[in-house]
Length: 250
Image (tube, rainbow, N blue to C red; front, side, top):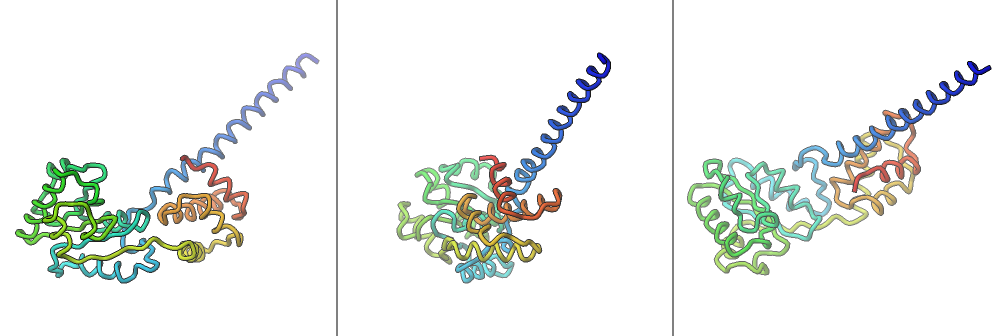
């Protein structure tokens, strides 16, 4: 009898251990899945959701062409419009004035031989950074290079040195608009359809209300739902959607 009790206890412990391992295995892939997917694929012009920015996207693509002779292009618009995405997609040497207002790192690593540079958030430049960008602009123009910049406002409204504002305003200027909620939902529905996903009618509205609102993150969530449902052989339901969202690191 004692042997039976001992055996039962051992089996019970094994069952608990197995359940713990199973729970850990089921939880870890989802968290890792989100971590893997949220960075998404590298930004490109192809995975930029244009919405009402078709003209700006076409203008940028033409400017990026090898035969373009225009020395500068500035994209402006509010946060979330996709400015950083497009700068990263350009494959230019990249600097972010909000992280390096003096452009100190840019000055150290700039290779004029490459001839193509991008500076994000120029409104955040310090006085030192403004001088550095002014000099960079002149050097690039003299050497046949090009400069791609972004700002939150058009050049004439930026609180920058007059000579720098003049330089930035002398090239091509395009405004980027933030996608409307309906445009985001339409884009996500198109992505889901391309993947063959059947989503509950309220899924995209819920996703828009509870996930980061930039298109890159939203697209990553659609990809995460697709992969997770396939790997776990579960249909995409609202409980599954909530499960994935709740497992996303903040």
